[in-house]
Every structure is written in structure tokens, then in C-alpha cells.
Length: 284
Image 1 (cartoon, one colour):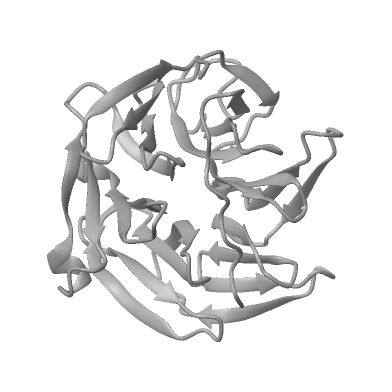
Image 2: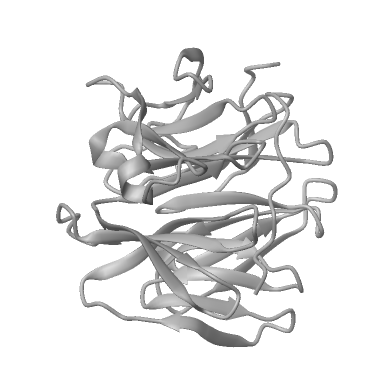
């Protein structure tokens, strides 16, 4: 494992977020939430694309049949391989937008929301199936962020950033999701806020620390075992990618910073950081 941080794509994203490796297309997908853009990057050839979504976009994930599922301000939408758009679940709520999202092992989308003013408890976490059926998982969170599954799919990790916690839920416990949720680890005051996360093949959880300028890795029992300092103050999320899923890509933000680092808003990468898990595509 290495800790050398490199620049994959130099950019000035206002709020870069949600990196995802699209194995079928051999590309990385991420979003700039506040500029309503979906970005892609192919490391092998350097090809990039940028697509405007028309409204703030919290996450974009590949679909099994091609195209993207996107967590937008007014609900969850679908882009076809030809660029056509339709709503999977349209539910506009004034003052609220979609934030981070992740695809579960069963192909469903777990999508979070938050208020623009970050009002406590006004966000949600909801599971969407392939035909748009919605199952509330957490009806009252503040800034719904990182979500990821253990290699065996029996555990899910989740972050509501203002709590400073990385939570874990044992999906085989039989208890309701909100009751089975418990803290795995807590980020101490002064170290930033946990944001997006990625789970590696060893079952460890990598977490980006907003205002902490670092990536951390926690073991499945909640022990902190790695810290990688970054040149940017506001890393937002991370994902393993590349042909062998060994490179850790990191999105970052420059919004709200009076004097941002020149790389703030760029896509960073730690080559050979570890070994990631292949992420499923959305079934819809």
C-alpha cells in the first residue's frame, strides 16, 4: 500500500462528490453538486466528459443496462445510454436536495437527502428499487452521506456527517434498520467531519474528512489504522478504481473556502492504496 497522492483530474469543482468506478466502461464517474454537472474520466486514455443535469445532482451511478441513475434535487432520475431522461421517483420538497447515494449488492439505490440550510433531522435515507418503489430507511437525518457494504453484504456502513460518527448496521439482525444502527467509530473534535466512504476487500472503511484534509481507514471493529494527509482541506468522498481496483480516487470541494488550495475541487488519486470491491450497477 502507498500514500503518495497524485492529481487525476485538475478541476475547480465547487462541490465535487460521489466518485464511482464504472467497471463496464472502465471509467470513473463523479459529480459537482452545486454546478449541476456529472463528470467522467477514463484513466487509460485520459478521455473526459461533462454532462449538465439542469438541477443540483448529489450522486450519479451506472445502470446495469447502460446510462446513469442520478440523485437530483427533486428526486431520483434515469439517463438512458442515448442521453434520454426520465424520473424514477419524482418528489420535490422545497429547500431540500439529493445528496450522496450508493448501489446495494441487490442492485437497489440507497439515496440520501438534506436541507440546503442543513436543518437538523430534515434529511432522509431511502431505498429505491428498479421500478421506483421507495422504502424509507432513516426518516430523520441531517446531512446524509457515505454508505457502503461489507464484502459479504451482511453489514452496511452509514454516515450522517454532523454526528461525527461512522455507523454500522447488521443487516442479518432482524431488527428494524434504525434500531440496528450503532456507532462503529467517532471522529474527534478538530479532525473534520466524516463525509463519503468506501469499503475495501479487507472489509475496512475508508472515510473522507471534510475540513480535516485527510482520508482515514477504519478496521471492521472500528479501529483507526491508517491516515493519509491530503493537500486539500475539504475532501468529500473516495472510491477504488482502475483496472485492478487498487487506486483510491478522492473528490474534493472549494465551496465556502476563502483561500482554497489550488487543487481544491480536483479529483485526486492514491495509486496502489489497497484493494477495492467491484461496485454493482443499479438494476433499473
